[in-house]
Image (cartoon, rainbow, N blue to C red; front, side, top):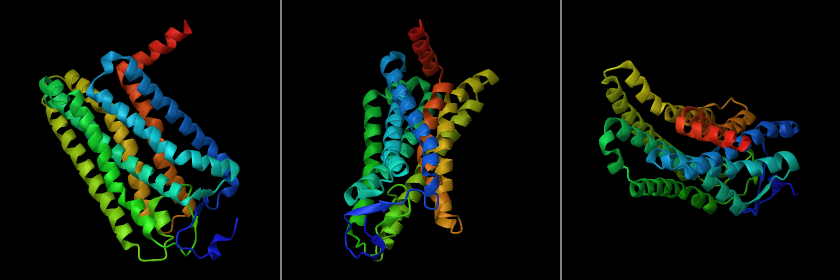
Amino acid sequence: MSDSNTTHFTIPSTFILLGIPGWEAAHVWISIPFCIMYIIALLGNLIILYIVKIEHSLHEPMYYFLCMLAVTDVVLSTSILPKALSIFWFNDREIDFSACLTQMFFLHCFTVVESGIFVAMALDRYVAICNPLRHSTILTSPVVAKTGLAVVLRGGLSILPCPILARQWPYCRSNVIFHSYCQNMAVVSLACTDTRISNYYALFVIFLLTCLDVFFISVSYFQILRAVFSLSTKDARLKTLGTCGSHLCAILAFYIPALFSFLTYRFGHNVPQYFHVLLSNVYLLVPPMLNPIIYGVRTKQIRDRLLHLFTHQGT
């Protein structure tokens, strides 16, 4: 491998991913919890998809959106972890330039998609609680499918300019990325030209889409809380809120690490680089791992079906 710091090029054939800078000696040990989280995420989300497929009582908008979330989580975690594990286990640090931009697109696209799915799920809970008699007529299967398509298109179209812009820049400083995956800002920072348009666009997308999604979720739950507290009995209020518990837990598991990672990356200039990398990996691995656990534990229909599968197989 040549010394890439002294090489001059316009478009590199490959980038070099360092993994977790400064912690190279601990890569194998770090890979163990990462691998466990990935396996749990894969198995958990695939089980959710299987249960919803075979259980006809779960063929409802809420569970269709849950399936979309499960697919998104599988794609999101798979977009980063196999390459990270190849770095940790085999010191395979090279990644093709086009493959790097493809990874960048998928991980950022499906992060936006996941946020959009949470908005759709909040809308579903709003209609189910505030207008239950019209729930089946408003959120029909075609509407759910179109909503899912719109969420995916929004994610793809909003993120597509990032790899397109990154491909236009000349890279004459280095091809070494101080990260375990091709994060947009980590790649663009290697360009030897004015990349403010990339930086401003990335910030615009993050703030606009995230703020809009959080706003719509907040409005939905404000209306839900108004409807809940207008109920006459405490049991009815608790039962109705219980149907939203899984969704709220999943939202917090997604947005809190994402916000913390973003704020640390943008403003934590004194924070060590390895902490940035660890945090950005955790923020992409923990929600895919937690979501099937949250919905499996808190959703009675899924929990009962899962218990039935295991007890039936055990007999």
